[in-house]
Image 1 (tube, rainbow, N blue to C red):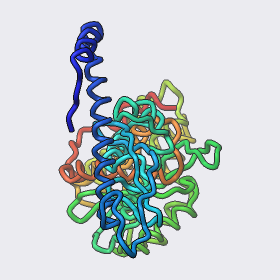
Image 2: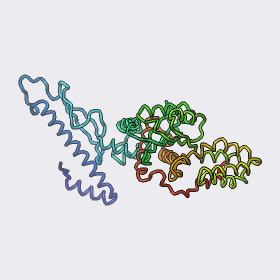
Image 3: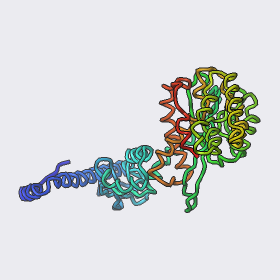
Length: 408
């Protein structure tokens, strides 16, 4: 492919470049697009020649199929942009070029790039605005969303994968809300999330599923789904969750050998919501003494002291703690090096925080499938870091209740 420029054209170009240096790259791009378009058109002409078995204007006895002109179309190529093509046709309509994909407006590398940028935090609207600069062609938000179709199929396969090869001993359970576009309206849709802890203390995301996180019934269906996918329910030893009404009962029914650990942060928040501002710091210190006691016996002793100290002044707060205390101290039944990780749903809260951080630029998620795509991508990234950070390896001096006095 030669780019021929006359002397007069070259002089005019040099003069224009002197005034606007960036113009030379624009001219180069235009010439490359034209040259590539001609090259691909010639290649398809040769392809048709092979299909017909003879050159242009050659007649062959017994053959009724001939060339039948061409039609124009554009095709976008990474690093080049839109190129003008002439797609040759035959009279019988049997010829199908293999050079340019049928019904595709840009090459697969662009699809892959769009999907990757979408997953790493750029919204479809922003990508649409940038597409002309990035790839030389304007692409609509709908096209960008469609570019993730193959990814969605792979993600759905991962989301519903077989779990029979996983030995899961602990489940961390929580939900997170998203603003989602459903049939033209914006709805708040909860997503149920379950993290599993293997025998070797590594973690993985087991469940990402839409459902009412404040109701026990969707959770039961989610637990049944995990077991249908191969999770050994009898091997599960512990479930860590907040105090959603009915959830603990459902969990115990579905995992009969497991105990329940109620998140201490949620319990402390509920207790402190019933405490006057001037007493919050003192009550928070006493709660920390219970939750961070060196043994179950010590925790029980601190709990008795808590009741004796505060029952008259803040009976509602004392009752709130008493109703949840046993479920808050379940972690003492497990290895001591794991206590720091089992006290709260902090492991899943971090994942949910990352979900929110990633979807914040989008404001509204474009439907359930798009939500699953984003959350699965984030989950897989998190799992890679979890391989290096097993549970029980967290420093035991984290001040989880340092900010309790700011609550309520």
